[in-house]
Image (cartoon, rainbow, N blue to C red):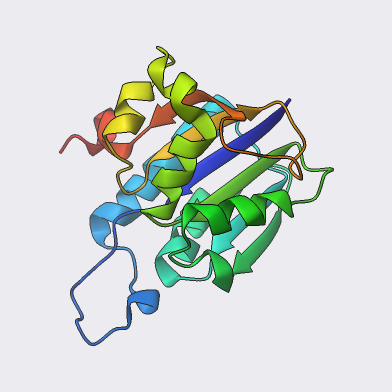
Length: 177
């Protein structure tokens, strides 16, 4: 069984309208949320072997907030993940090393949300798995979906994922204020 972790970047800043979208940093709330989600990941023992991260500043800063990740995973910043549609994200997953048992993708919406819905498939979204309704309702900044994958990365198709959990920063007590 493989594990796929899909993390949407934390909340970014719109303070400087002259910045190109790719260069927008996290805002203060986003930094707090990313650190809180790092705590969730560490608490759950989530330790990816490979991290695929969009090259956008906000995704790279989200990754920085997760540090240190256990077992020093291979990290690959990818221009191709920037604002990628779900099909491109799926194609990228299919190229992941077959030796990776756990993969973390840090990317953007709407592609990440669409990918999560596609992986769960209609049957999975109709079930009562923890977080299913929350995932159906949207994919907030900083949210993490964990999927169990019973196939190889190369053969990954829509409907091949089983949603294990979906956690958003707003679910955490430290983010309530």
